Length: 396
Image 1 (cartoon, rainbow, N blue to C red):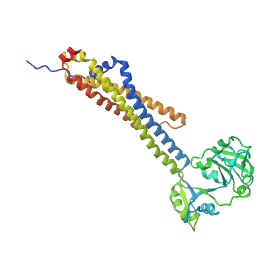
Image 2 (image 1 turned 45 degrees about the vertical axis):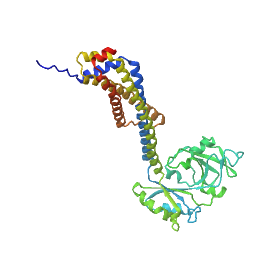
Image 3 (image 1 turned 180 degrees about the vertical axis):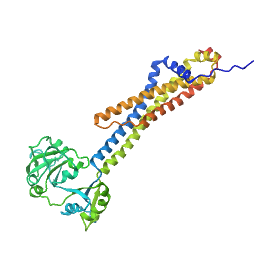
Image 4 (image 1 turned 180 degrees about the horizontal axis):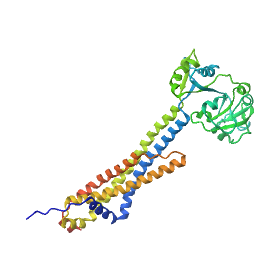
């Protein structure tokens, strides 16, 4: 007499049995899957938005270039404020690889909408003298009006940075603002300059006008320099001694594009924090799945006993409930990945960014849900498998 062996369940049978268990209680399944979906959506959206932001910053760097250097006066040996020589801009222009250089000089003056506004109310706007090459060196654009030229640079004319114009409530040229002790006519408003945010918050007048009307001493407080990409490091090394041969240690040289690069790197810290919150939500969702499966085992004792009586092995019962847990988690994971992707696209489009959802984020999200489903369903599946047919039928 041959020994009977239980029939093996094919993967298709496992999926069918697991799906049947989920269909029998749709409301509970939906609520449990919702917890998983929220956690996965949060994680995918955070990674996607961070990646989109980083991609926008990198594209911005490509557009703006990384070959802009700035020169500022540092501190003297005795801790005082150093000064750049009046001829320093011309000296920088003599460096062979330099393609353009321009300077600004910060002035001890305030800009106000009218002469009736108190001097103490500056709105965070700085008045600067600017030479005619500044806009070319910064590769900036005039939003409205014109940039300073040889004529307007000698008279009470001013060009406002984008932030300055907004704070002063000026959007068109032709108006006047009060600088120092006289009216200056607004001849232009600049677009935003990402590599020179200090210009966005400035009111710019010509060097000649600054000397004539505002007491400018001619010493620049910031020099902007551009050179070929391949020569940036070489220029960086010689700038301090070129600008101030006698006191090169009193000259600070920096690369503005480094700030954007650092910003792209710093976004990772925020991403890690939000990923931690998403992981907590995912863990809570996994607890919900485990709770659902435990209750399912308690409610379906009669079904388990009947299946065991008809020949189902402990392993087959264990696989059935484990499959239900995995399907439940996968349902929430797929829904969460879709929601997270849609949230990323919506946010990126609203900010004018390229929408980037890394494939590894989607793959990692699905793997995380399957892992959560396996862990959450393991105990309920083992508990269901341990039930004997007589005990399950007697207590049903």
